[in-house]
Image (cartoon, rainbow, N blue to C red; front, side):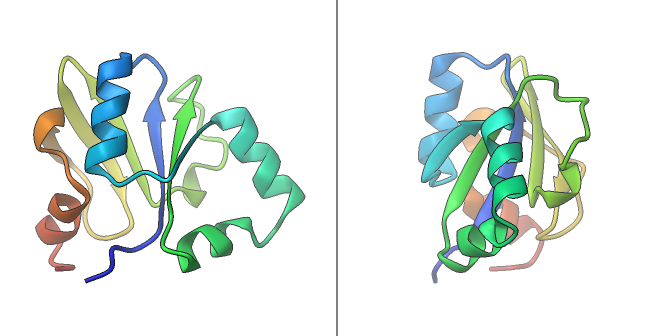
Length: 116
């Protein structure tokens, strides 16, 4: 099964180790800042369609996680603190899932929500 493309927002106060775990476990193709994301969305109205239709996963690191600019464009929004991932938004199913970061996988998000 091919995993869906997704735009995933996370908070910026992550260690490099946690970022590495997310990149590996969520099959992230590219990591960018919120400034870069907002610019790409503004400059190319089809940008999100291209990301999703090509089954790419984009990790967007929000400088201020409680800044809801373009939050509606994210497929998944995760707040990570003290080794736990709090899934606050998930277009693949209901949010409110809390998992240790080490067990957070794209398949877990989809399976939990009945998508695989």
